[in-house]
Length: 482
Image 1: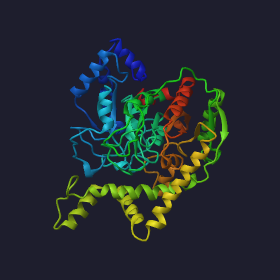
Image 2: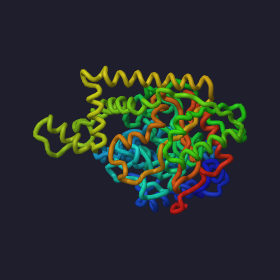
Image 3: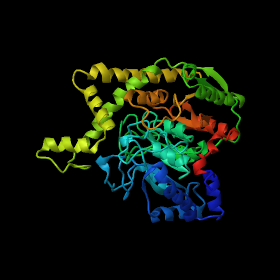
Image 4: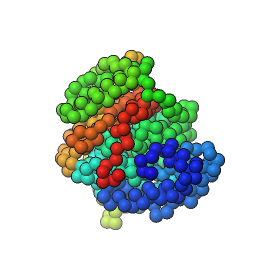
């Protein structure tokens, strides 16, 4: 059962070959069995939510919803009514939200059943899922290696088939990079496609909720249910409801695929380079036309991002002061000490570092020199993509410059930040992009990134699905979890 797609599981439920409780029970058992090994989940529910089960069964009886009864976990920064939402931080270790995030409520309305909350880098700040107050996450393909971050718990849970689907968030690559390192499919939609209401913010102009699953088809089905305008979110785009349309055939004739040759040829890992070219050539074999495109300012993306994202982070996290909510120190003799001790005890080292960098970039005397200049670079990168999309329908390239590295191997922040060099440019431009598995090198998964035009999730998902109709990389499961 764990190798089935969402459509296949939905067919079993509709045919009454199994019940919702039986299907969810299979995955609940796997969550219990494998969580100690992977560290993928911070919270596992002791029982299914009766409200969700009733909604799922009602939809199933009506034959209206392909997601009814399908289990999932949410990244632990989506507010869940009555269930802890910690952001993997001591600052929110005991926070139980009084409401659901819009993403959570929409998937409940679609009939999906929550099994738990996924581990992550604290407040979504990291590329390895080592920065969690609840411990690191292990990559199911090699438990000595990282799963990527910050949505590493979601990626590991899907890769280990603890759940068929998980929600994630992507600020600078936090869905795509862990999806690539764990051998699954993950999509970051266009900025504004999915509501951010109830999603605890890191960098408000960059954060976007997305989906992680085995296949592009599974991601498309779930993203359809998540998408749509939300009056509770001022950054939610006023777009008509979006519905995923699965391609009837693997024929890509008429499709123009842009290739950033500098990205691929510059890869130091020959295994990743060969697999990336092989995947792009597979698209060509299915009828796509390949065209070289240039993104001349992309090499400035990492520098700009690590000014802009920390600046927004310092502003968003200022609310966690030990007074209104969140961790409060037990030792303080005055208000100033209360603030300092509460934040020092509540936030981990990586979060504190980014808050300090952001506060510095926004300070008088540095705002124009750094923050304003980074915003100008962001505009140049966006313009580069617009020019490229005048020639092509989507852009293909690597996700990560390396396979999953070992825990503790990245000793400096700069080397960790460089892991996002291929994912950050599309994030700065707000474009939809995904990672899909394309094979293994050194026994570890490699992903291909597809970047689409603004609000054109359909094209990148369709190409990924057509590729997966002809390959089986997305169906492979780590031996220890098969």
